[in-house]
Image 1 (cartoon, helix red, strand yellow):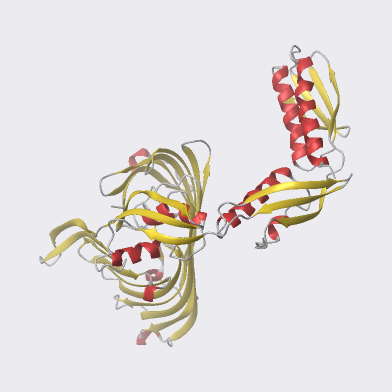
Image 2: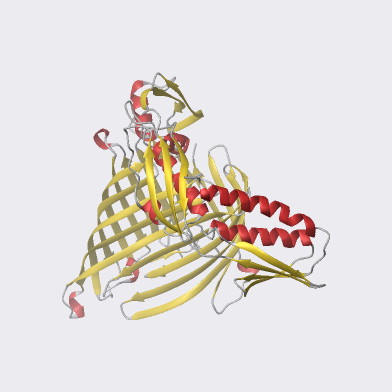
Length: 560
């Protein structure tokens, strides 16, 4: 049977072209679009050419949505208004589809790809074909082709036949890593997620550069190349392994209240791939005042037993003057989807000792079990232009509270719930401009919550315009809108607005508040990483922004 769908589209497009010609010389101020006799749109436009383009655009949108029998019935003009009358006809339903294969290897597609076509939509039909090709290209068929071989159209429905030519099934024969030692080559193959005998996967090959750039101990010399030889494919990766060890910071001395000399400062140490296993070790020590200090260490061992499992652990200690001492330990096991995406489980233990002898309680200890997800679908991990990021961690457990013997309270065991995460979306609005929308949130639920167990927000990583970790809360939600102009691959300038709701709900005390931050900044590439400088203003809901209370935030991300 003739392809009636294609004939109708060709006739409509030819009619559309000739339809415009007679009216170029008429000048109109307004146009009204009537669909099936009812006013649908009022549009102001200066020239007839603009009006014709808008009419044609609206008509083609109807066709795209499945109104294949729509037509421009008549046009009525006066000195001010152009009235266009369009009949939409009935929207065409997708009655049926057939997949006609040119080989015996009938690749199976998910039905969900076709469920969205219950009502015919030409744009969705095109995306469906593109998705089918992506599936084929990612499962060993790089030479696949899909055509609409025929369609059967009546007044209310259409049936479509897809002609699928899969082409030869291609596997990876060899992966060459020039200049890389065999042990390092094994690490590279784990990072890129490909090996000998795997089916050709266009998505994974395109992600090789992104995965390589996500680790600090490999430098990509140039992008991956591949060639097809005798029914298989050979990959060529060009990388350089390097040991990247960083120690930086500042250390000073300061006398305490008793005249004794104490060390103060801020020290960071980051070690990558020191023992050639792709491991990472991080340490941060801060002591800006004599009586308070913070120490955090963490380690990650990826590709455990040559698998996609990642073993990680951390220890964090925080002493707040003479108020309390916190000790938290955590061990987890992640499944690596790729070097920047993972899901995992973990166990955590958090103990807190009250250093105030006059307090009602002596200590708390919480044992938790949790799950975490970390997904990133952006085009650039350091300077995203489009895509999204999701990082969420939730845990449940039991908390034991030990009270002072003078408080007349018995020790208690209570359930403890904790949820923390951040979700970001990057929306491109031009070749170099993008908008970042994000929300960072956290909540601790416990019937006997004390101040030393709270989140500490404020500053560069959370709420800009406020001092670092100066706001202690039990729950918070920080929404951000940020306009970025990308200067280079890893550089941008930006303006932003932060809106934060927070709640402090502890024993015998409750408050909630709104805070706002605005500002601008720049992120630019240095020899060893990405340096970010931000100037910001912050205020509470009932206050005004004051320039004299502005904050300067400095951040650094290493990728050397």
